[in-house]
Image 1 (cartoon, rainbow, N blue to C red):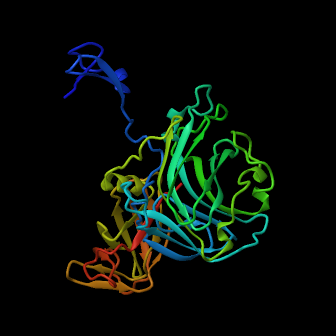
Image 2: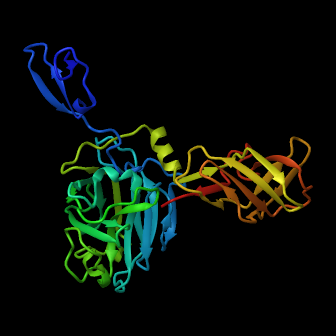
Image 3: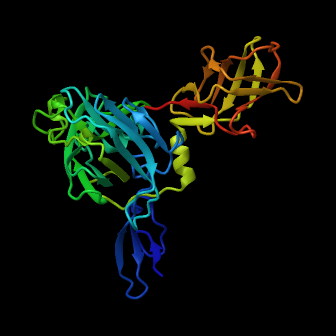
Length: 386
């Protein structure tokens, strides 16, 4: 078995050596170089579509939002109606178990000029400083992914710089065979103009286009970085929304620095989940509840993972109970978030109304009363999506 060496025999490799470590061959004692892939090289979180905290399927989608697979925003402006789901249809023998599926359920064969449709994921600027955007040393980015669609033809992928007046670059790829998994690799040149903010807000956005009206298709496809011109964004894009027979699947999405694609970086499920929890989390167990007045409780939650920013809260159900240590149970089927709440990136204190008969100051443990009697079903969600 080869023995790891550094700059000379019997030396430990330095950090500088780790990018291309030397190995000693026991047979002939010659040294060769072996490239070592950088961990977390994939800029995309949940590119294997394995995490879907919000649920595995959502029907009747005709507007923008996060619906199923974590970190993937469905952007729809008046172009059809869809079901979005986490699916088990995956390319054979590639190691994937899940894909993101988009199913057209109401067609729009003649989109208006301003209509558009795409899948999107966003990236924090502080996680992109190493690509050196806006400098003479700006790094190229290479995108690789597996895709399958009933609708063949030309599709567009766009990277948009929201820190610099939506500068962008678009590239096309072709789905050659209907309903067949195909691997695509696309390289985007580095951008020497416009540095990215070193903070926790969105700096770059990656858009997989599915359809667009003439406002975004009537120009010339902008295949190099430049200022935003709407008509050059998605030129040549097929209209995926033109038939209810159309289905689209994607998985194994990887975006990395450099001009070549490496094998997809599979992360352990728990690591991938924690990365997604930074942006969205559902909870069904609170640490404490105290009556504010006769109709509301302050409920405290500790997050499992620190959030990107102070999150917003939304109830997943209107049926909540407060158990008062065996002394009382307060139940409501019309719960509301009654007021502004106190939060930071680690915990939150939410006032939930809709109760009756409370005694101010009484304490208890909140849980969802209906659906699961063990009280573990999530009843509140916290979002700090980009």
